[in-house]
Length: 203
Picture 1: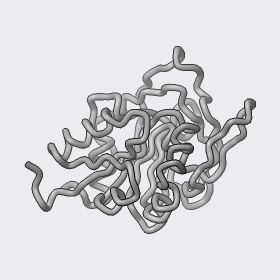
Picture 2: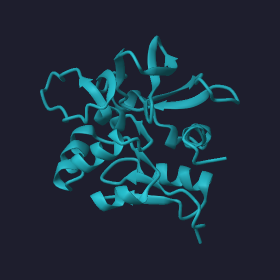
Picture 3: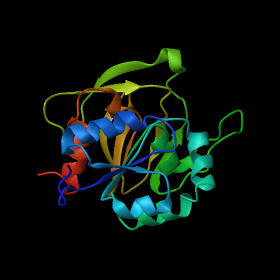
Picture 4: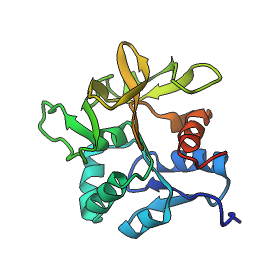
């Protein structure tokens, strides 16, 4: 049974790596600490939010279909801590380089970066690389890049937490964190711990 004082962490549960993020949080905070976010009311129950990887165009469409876009943007603008990975980063970005096919998601426009989708290759070209991250002790993080976006530009006010191959792969702007890779696919919870601890949700 979860403790009444334990923080509840939401995972946007419309599509994508939802179980993997939920499992990582429960390994850190304990069973019962995760709230699947499927409706606007769920956003009022959480102290932080994870926006998982998946398919960004589908996620964008589902935000509208479920009436989540405006409430989500309002909560994030109000300071709700959010860790966005891969497609989640695309949803948060202020600017998205247009894709050749022309089918791009509508972003929330909150994180002051410009990104390009699927810049690290196709699914079969996925890879893992050791990434040094600011504030993360214990050595490089095993970062999984799967059809990952590339951060093309970082605007003033955005802190770069880590690079790989000459490009930023982890950034922070106040309460908003964006990663081009998938920390939830590793058994290493250090990054989830760092995020939660940075916002006072973990001792």
